[in-house]
Length: 408
Image (cartoon, rainbow, N blue to C red; front, side, top):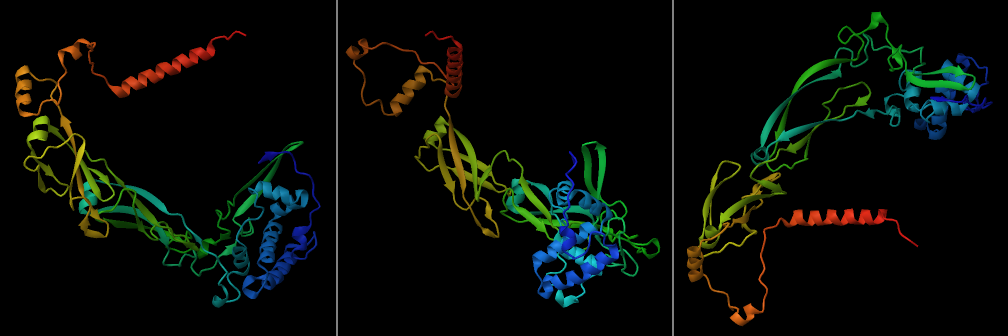
C-alpha cells in the first residue's frame, strides 16, 4: 500500500484486552494470553467476541513487526495494510497453534478447530447428442496430492512441528518501508521461512516419504458415467478428488457436460426436433422418406392417403424423443417441421393442368372491373433486408436533421 504516513496513535486497546502493559515482554504476553484464552474459550462457556478480540490482540503483539506498526501508528495502519481486516486469522487456529492442539481433549472441540473447505476443480466435458441419447463412459487421468500415509500429514517422523519464529505461527509477515518524508509502503506477504504454513520442521525430523511436504503425488483415473437423458450443462461430481491438504475438507472434481452441435436434430428438454423439406407435389400428393435416428434405427416417415401438408406445419411421433434422465424407458417426442420447396415458375401447360385439378377461384373479375384498375408489377424482395435498409436510412436522415442549424 502507498500513501501518506499514518498519524501516530496512543491506542492501547490490544494491550488492555489481555491485560498487559505496553512494555510487556513476550513471556508476559504468552502467560496473559494463556490465562485469558482458556477463560474466554467458547467451549468453556466464554464470550466468543472476547475470544476473537483476544486472538487478534495476541496475533499482533506476538509479532515484532506488527507490534511495531501498532505501537507507532495504531489499528488503522494494520487494517489498511491487511486489506481492512487487521489480524484476520481464525481465533481457534491461533489458540490451537499456541497450545499445540486442543487442551480440552477430543470431546471439547465442537467449536474448536474449524476446517476450511478446499476449492472445487471444474472441467468442461464435450459430449455428442448420441452420447446423451445412448449413454456413455469416458476416462479422465489426473495426478493429485494426497495426505502422506507415513506421517498422516504431519510432515515429520514423530508428528512434531514447531511454531515458526519468523511469523510467530501466523504464516504471514507485514513489512513497512519509508519511501519519503510523507510516504510509506506497507505490505503483507507469506512468511518465507515457513512458506506460509506457520510452522517449521527440523531437517532430522522430516518424514522420509513426503520430505516434510505432508502430501505425496498420486495418479488416478476417473471413470465418468454419462447417463441416458442427461442435459447440456449438467454436472457430474466426484467428491473429494482434488488435491488433499492437512486440516482441509477436500474439494470436488466437477465435470460440466457441453453438448456439441448436431447437424440434423435439435434438442429441447426431452424432445427432439428435425426439419424436412417437401416438394409441392409431395405436400399435395403424399410423401415418404427414411429418417436415421440417433441410435442408428431407420424410421419410415410417410403421410396419410389424401393428406395435404401445409407449409411451416409440424407433425409429432410420440416416444421417439430423448430418454428421460433416470427414467430411460420413458422418452419425449420427435417433432418434424415441414417446409416447402415451391417451383420457381410453371409453364402454361402446367398451369392449365393444375387448373383442371384444383378448384378455380370462386369469383373472376369482369372486363369492366379490369378496365377500371391500374395494372401493377410484383418484384421479389427480401423483407428483412428491406426493413433493415429503410431503418438505416431513417436514422441517417434523423442525424442530418439534428446537425442542421435552426433559425429563430
